Length: 242
Ligand SMILES: NC(=O)c1ccc[n+]([C@@H]2O[C@H](COP(=O)([O-])OP(=O)(O)OC[C@H]3O[C@@H](n4cnc5c(N)ncnc54)[C@H](OP(=O)(O)O)[C@@H]3O)[C@@H](O)[C@H]2O)c1
Image (tube, rainbow, N blue to C red; front, side, top):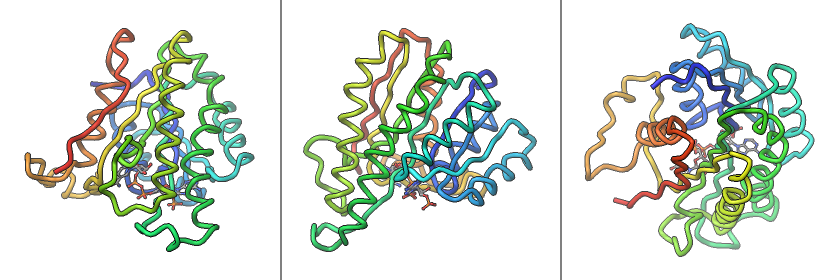
């Protein structure tokens, strides 16, 4: 599978899974437009990718709690390209704690703003570039916490609220954008192992039936879904927990 003809936008790619996606997609030939809350973090990942020989990579700052920052990110990408093929909504702040009162009001507002409002505004602002593509896809990293009835995570209620908002948004969007040719796909993983793709652990992480889901498998799910012909619209990935 190669992605040479894909222009991909990824939010929150300064570390962890977003960085992993940026590195793997760039390795497979995609032109990557990656953002992180801090420009320095985005530039670090851009430079890691350039050091691997892929020069088609661009770094931006984007704070998903700030509508102006999202608009600036989209405008910055539009200065490089007239279309994007894949938007990956990866960014979303995690908040720990099974007790509603354990988090401050500010942390609760920030968690919901980054995951819920941030995702809606990111899609809104990138939609014109997506609609210029002949193969537009929106991929959202939701969470098992966004699936109805889920209760097994130690995440705070605000995180559940943010992920449920992402799930509801993706659900309606997948129907409303389909006539325009946009596939809206969502992943609902439980906690997964998140090894560094540039470390030996990437190849060594156990991936047996008794092991936790891995970032490796999630990357492969996304690549598989995006690579399918347009009649194959994989709307959601759900995973049985260990
Ligand atoms: N890891 C898991 O087990 C798991 C399970 C289910 C779903 N997910 C979802 O998968 C996605 C990636 O997971 P992850 O493990 O890589 O997440 P993570 O380690 O919790 O990292 C969160 C990412 O979101 C960014 N972020 C937080 N607030 C932001 C804001 N206001 N604006 C922009 N970026 C912001 C962080 O950037 P900074 O570096 O600036 O903090 C960081 O890059 C997330 O949507 C997560 O909810 C993860």
